[in-house]
Length: 427
Ligand SMILES: C[S@@+](CC[C@H](N)C(=O)[O-])C[C@H]1O[C@@H](n2cnc3c(N)ncnc32)[C@H](O)[C@@H]1O
Image 1 (cartoon, helix red, strand yellow):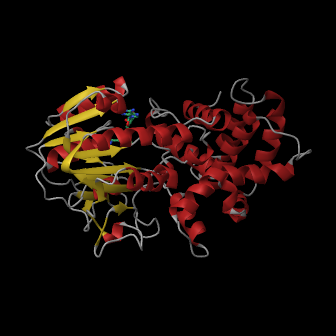
Image 2: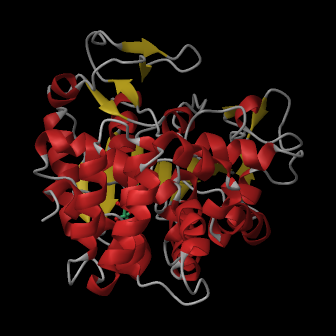
């Protein structure tokens, strides 16, 4: 019987490659010390999936015949442990994968012998296996969706080799950033000079769980921090955070504009409850309303001086943190783009005269940001671009002197997640 850690990884791989679904947030709960192994194993299986399958294929009797997912999962997990996880013994890597292949739900019992034979052969020279796998083209690990996200990230055009370099960077496990909420930063967190309050985890430093639990700081990617460092000196008394959970940006808004009243909308009941809890834990006040933001805004007359619309999106910019992203179904994109447009329309209708609206998505895809911005330019002559970010966070050719109204840090010069946004001001 495979260990719980390996069973959890196999379940997650079936969810991704069988259903096109995401790895559940709490997939590694209750794994204790084995959580590290499970995390490394799952990450490598997801990030090297194409190469692992390409390595297996020519070794099959009939390479053109489809291989059941259970066999592919058991082989991929065994190969990853043999090639890149030197702490795992040959015996554990091979035997546990064979046991997995024998599992009726997660494996494919008729292929138990095949899995055993291929892995035993591979175990004879583990360094050579790693070299062979690494030598296969990295492009094999990219789905068409990933390819499209990379091209969009580097748009309008990219130099030779840039796409491969970006992909290689995004295959490294991400390092979290933090935002200081109060007091001093604990040891092991280093200030990021260009962003006040932003802290990075030093090499080898432990994850600062006690500090986060005491609300001394929060995990927040540097792209989100840079987005919220907009330059805006007009009076802000009424703020709307239209899509607020889990509340990272609501927290920053509350701290940046302490005298203002803050309304935070969130459609999902459980996420709205988490948002309330987060704000309470941090001692911050906001009116949290569980509602569809478009419906709520369409049914209310109130206006706001500052609106943040951090819209639900494809998440293409987060593929470093979510290595399953390339393999998701992605059939939801048209619905998301429609929802973003509706939210944007409803939000701009509630922007007070002289007010600022910041729209953002953690995605590189043009239909999730640039297309909305163009539509707004045509549809709403009362709204004007507001150049509230340093030009370095925008795209060349889309800046006004030292500033830009289009937030789009270049992925080759910026270590944060892929983010796009724009700011408009109402006349
Ligand atoms: C990108 S996340 C927001 C992240 C948040 N701003 C933060 O920094 O912590 C988008 C959020 O919008 C919520 N959402 C999706 N559709 C919505 C809708 N129609 N109205 C309000 N919230 C919505 C999602 O449940 C999700 O929590």
